[in-house]
Every structure is written in C-alpha cells, then in structure tokens.
Image (cartoon, rainbow, N blue to C red):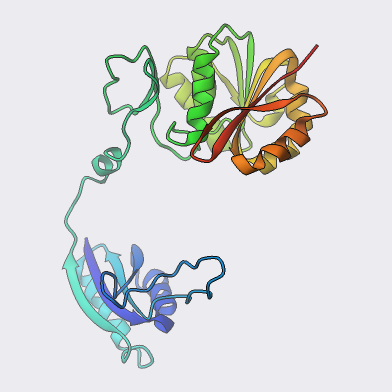
Length: 297
C-alpha cells in the first residue's frame, strides 16, 4: 500500500477529499491539523459560553491510502493539474505504508475485565485469570456490550450478587447478549434476549453458543408473559418511554434492573416508573447509576 500526503487550505479539504475517494480510487482519506504540536495548533471543539470554533483548520494534512504507488502518484499529478486547486495544494510525500498485523493490534486493545474477583469477561485470545470461576468469552463486535462500560459492569455486578435459579429472565435491548449470558452462568434457566437490531440478535445467538449457554434471542415481539427478572441496559429516554411495557413484563414479586442512566436522570426515571413500582439507586460508577425496583403482589 502507498500513502499520498498533501497539505491543503481549509477551503480545499472537502472538495479534494471527495475527489480522492469518488474519482481517484483512494481507499481512505484522513485529515489532520498540519500545525499540530506547534504554537499554531488549533482546537476545533468549543466550550460553553465561548465563541464558536472554526469549521476546520487553517492548514490541513490529508493522508490518502492507495493500493499501489502508481495510483498514489497518478492521483497527485491529477490534483496538481486542477488550475483552481494547484496554487493551494502542496504534495509532501508518496510513500510506502509498512504492513502491520491489524488484527493483533486491535486485539491488544482489549484485555480481560474483572466484574468480581471470581467473575470475568475474557476475549477469546486471552487466558482466563486463575481466580476466575465464571468466565464470559466475548469478543468486541457490532453490538453494544463488552463489559468495559460502567453501565454493563454494574448490571453484571448486580447479576453476580443476586445469583440464583431465576425461572425466567428477560434481557430487553440485549446488544451482545452479555447480560443474558451472565444470568445463565449464574443459575437462570429460561432466558429471552430481545433487541430491535438484527445484528444484536445474531451477536447474542453467536455469543451464547460460544459460551455454551441456552438463550432465546429474537426481536422485541418475542418477549411474552411475566418474568421474575427483567434487565434493560439501554438509555434513559427509551427507558422512560418503555416504562409501561417493561413493568408489564415483571412478575409479581419480580425484580426490574435498569441501566444506561446518568445520575442527574434518576428523578425522571423514578417518576416514570412510579405507577407500577418504586425505583431506587442500587449502584453508581463514573456518573452512571443502576436502578432497581421490585413489583409487589
């Protein structure tokens, strides 16, 4: 692979980038501040109460990736042949890109995650810690839920701390299926995991099979009846809208566990669920909270 590196003023960044991708067969284009690391470096992210930042840097470095040297060199020649662009463009280099093991580089970013000293989330390419008694093998994928986010960790801690033979469990908005799998590993029996995203449903099925547990994964309409335990790690706004539906799934005496909620959103959730059950904050981490409620009757 070869990389074409060039500098462009702000007004040329978008049209040159579009031309590289749409007409000159670049595999990718990245844009950086040409003055990064110097006194002229320019931040593009504003702060409340401060003037709006500029739309782009005064001088940008564009890096376009091509399959071979001929394609990269040809693209440079064609760009400089444009009379409206040539005065502002400066070609810095056409250079080979070193081959790298991108799979290994990506894998190195994900390490085992401790939920409790005995319960861990472990990517497939890692060995499980010696102290781990329960392990979920889970690789990063398209669906949300790898155990690294505070909301997921809090749900997993709750499951580990309330382990028992739940007769039925619903994981609503299952993502990767991590909560459903955790419930199965901690003694739950019949587990339904549902999501509006087909990729999440597929990921849940694959992850459940990889961990040797039985989970029924499907679209939300697959959920039915009453569940002694209902889990929903989504976000506060959909959780408020879903309050009547989620409460309808909680069996008398059953528990509801909600996550994806910021500390400042607690009162809104308490109000939304008050007609059916009383929510309380059961855990918190990095500004996020876990809320639980029990249905009487």
